[in-house]
Image (tube, rainbow, N blue to C red; front, side):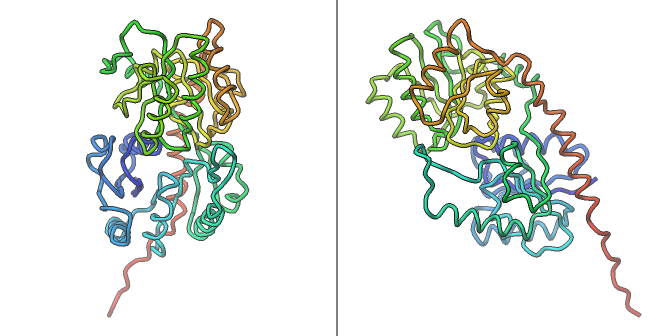
Amino acid sequence: MARLLLYLHDLSATGVTRNALALAAALASDHDITLATGRATGTLAAEAAGAIDLGGHGPRAAHRLRTLARALSPALALSAGNRGHPFFFAALAGLPHLRRLYRFSNDIDHRDSRGRRRWWKPLADSAQLALLRHSADHLIAVSQPLAADPRLAAIPLTLIPNSIDIAATRGAAALPCPHPWATDQGPPFIIGIGRLTPQKDFATLIAAFALLRRQRALRLLILGDGPQRPALDAQVAALGLTGWVSLPGSLPNPMPLLARAAVFGLPSLWEGASNALLEALALNTPIVASRTAGNAVTVLDHGAHGLLVPPGDPAALAQALLLQTGAEAIRPGTRASHFSRETALDQWRRLLANEAARLPPLAPPARFP
């Protein structure tokens, strides 16, 4: 039984957190797993009751993680998402007899809606990748575009796409939901799910909805929290959409709403691999996604199981949403079966076993006369 130290930046309601917690739970029967996090607070804290709280992301927290690793002597240490990689690297630098794994959960190149990057971002990315080339024993990519990035070619890499527990997702969709739109008789609604950040580009979804409302009676529901809430609320008011757009924050179980939605919208400017996209697949909800939303092109098989649009284009998004809320909507069908949880777990088990086997045996203690 390999001992694994799993590091999460925090326990907020992100795809990285959900995937890491699902992985830890599924592998607990055949691995000795310790979960450590920079902050043990957040929407998903109740699902990680045994997590070790490092108390932040500064030097003291890094020292705590390093001390924990020394005490546990794990064979493997895994950083679950991009945001935690620099901290993870610094905390564990130089520790012997430890295989370091980094999971790339998101696009390395982050651009704004005009295709621009902040001037310092390439420098920061290059510095981080240079450090990883010296410390990483193995990388895990969640999508084919990430796996194909030439900057990662020097490090052993395995592609393990995000996965979905189809039965559990459908079971969650049958549970009661407190939001009134889950049961009311109002107009159909479009749903978006994710952090309210520039990356998710919900501003374009709202702008597209304003165009769509001129042609069809619909509502828009955006689930999530984040720093863009004031700007999005102001946009809704400015467009005269108050009462037609709901931003209730995060919900512990959004599946009943995702199952009932007329269409799921994923307008992200960048992604790694969207969990919500897989959940929409499992629930057979019609989908419209931007081509830059991580592996959406692959997941939707180039448009065979949902519509794909250019990023940051409200008119194109509105037209696709109009089609997907009509009688000729393209549904995912059985596409979710290609991303089953069982397949991904088999890949993880093989990877962890292979990495643990690469560690040389510990030297016996020295003998003194």
